[in-house]
Length: 227
Image (cartoon, rainbow, N blue to C red; front, side, top):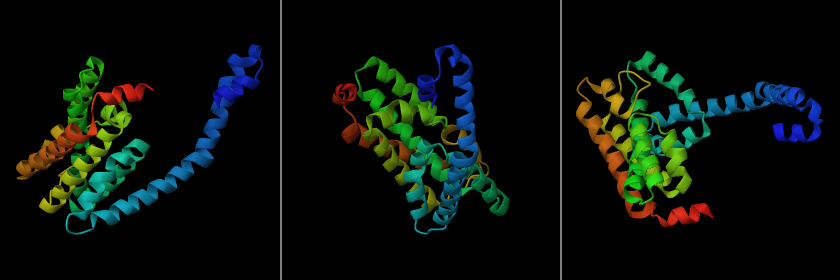
């Protein structure tokens, strides 16, 4: 929008009119078009997740654990804070946390595999630091800096998240709170669930790491990515 407006505004008025018109148009669109559309999408995603959590035989963990980080890419994943609050209010526990913890840990595992396998110094530093960030509960550096950039590591992370989420559902893990995951998330499972919690995280990380190491990344992708 800014570029299009700048082409049409006289240079002498550019400093004043371009930012003003850009903000005016985009704020209007955000309030009356973009916002309502995404709000409707968020409601559908929330309703679908509530339905998925009711599925038996570990299917809820398998599905949510697989697709969670895809939703993170869209940026609408913060709506699930509402879901977690509802779960804690109604049931005094939060099974959703255990599932998404695995999806987060798995992306860290995939980034870790890239970091240990690559010979490129910059990518190694980025991958290792972003994997640590994921293990602390923040996957955006791993997703956008490494995994999604090369494609296959992101997919392997999704598989790892699905496997870990499946185990979380089968084992019936339920957090006592919300907002923290993976390593900090251990604080939510000190009521006798800490061992299975560590186990599902290690499985998610190990699955994503192994698949990425074997099938998801090679330094040949660096050359292909530069084309």
